[in-house]
Length: 333
Image 1 (tube, rainbow, N blue to C red):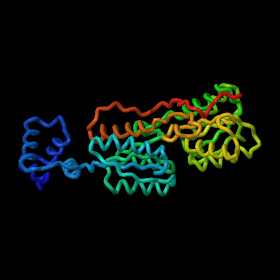
Image 2 (image 1 turned 90 degrees about the vertical axis):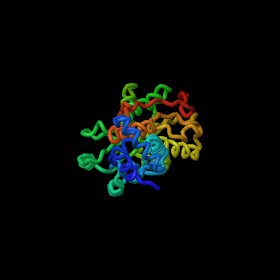
Image 3 (image 1 turned 45 degrees about the vertical axis):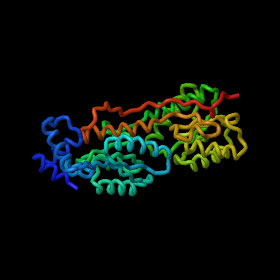
Image 4 (image 1 turned 60 degrees about the vertical axis):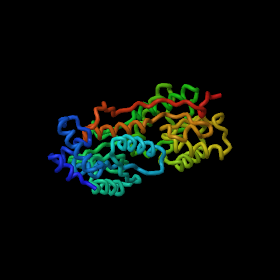
């Protein structure tokens, strides 16, 4: 089987020119492109990603660090990134950081060792300073669901504060005033912003935020269960519950039913993210759409545009949430 080197020699051009032809680069003159295509045909050469990477000095692979592999949220993010890049002939290498600083750094080191052309990072534990230092290298770095001030043009986020406000206001508009809240870990920026939005909505309605009805969860179903057990044992009355994500809402709802509550008659619940299972819960979960699939796609388009010069897509970096009304929130009796 012919090699890319033989094609370049047969056509009398450089490896880089062969690569540009294979990648459809419009800057190659038609006469040169025809010469390369003719050489491929005569030699029976079939382009492949490995050959393209040799010719272009690109690995045609992108590293993706996520917090975990079992969450629907990250499944959607990975799908958005992978679908866009695979359609462009690129491959994604995935590593999980498990919300631990050492494991996140180890995952990034692994992806760098695979000579990825860019990194898309969803990091929970490593510091802004670490990411800023990493960004000083020649390797392009994109950050998901987090803002690092000096890297804002490389950050992709949802407007979490607007989402938190929207969730609380939905409960308030349905007449609820005794509202419990299960947040994510308080050191996470998205948790902070959602809570700020939640409190702002309460303030607009003249409702005080009850710290005794606030439980700090972990964004997992188990955190929702623990949170509901805590709230029910607190001695505080509440007719509605806002959860910082759908996984915790799922756990909280299951736990509430185990304690004999009927949903939504006894307790209205709203989540955040609109993950795939939200519309299959009982009752179907009212939630805030977090367009993480689109964020993933847009991060991939950034890579295609600025790393590979293969896209002219306008890049959107901040995404607005929207309310998804289903059956888990009703007017307070």
